[in-house]
Figure 1 (cartoon, rainbow, N blue to C red):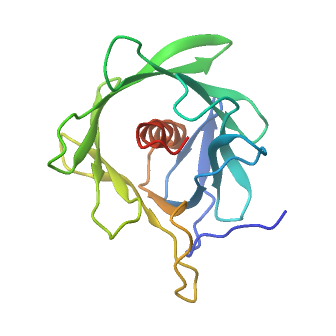
Figure 2: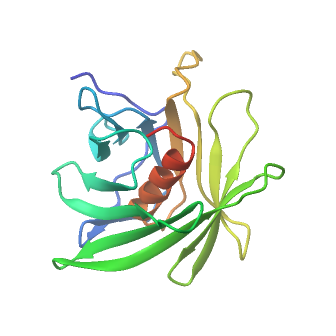
Figure 3: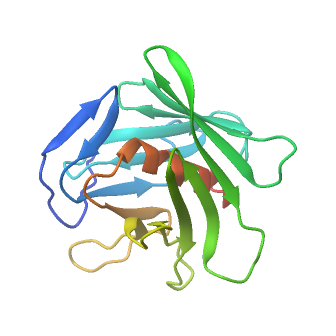
Length: 197
């Protein structure tokens, strides 16, 4: 399989905590809003070396009520479920030491005006997903609501020679000290809300 490389190089100073990935440096990933499984919906995430690090596969139909985030080894990191009676609400549960624990809640903002698409509660963190206006392409960022810090930003990927790739291939920049598994889970929810998975 061919490798996909982000535009900039990143360092490899990172730590793994119970399968959840933290980095002390800014990192760049490539998101491909497609599944590697034929006739499946999902998302595949590549690191700066072109290796798959996360994947989401939805073997059913688009908009399914439950999907799973896995690492490359197929270990289940998170289950994401749509709450049945709450419009636009999703819950994430992470797996630690063979037990499932509540992790985050995402609420879709129901207004069409404004740039905030979703509000997120993850432990003591209050985050939001903001839409970014970059033509017709999918572009968004995850922001800390308390201090305005941009934690993650995704936009349509360009090759090193400046060629704009398909609108389902994104460059994802993550700030230092970010829980990468949490960000990938939140991107999965946003993909579900936008009807991409």
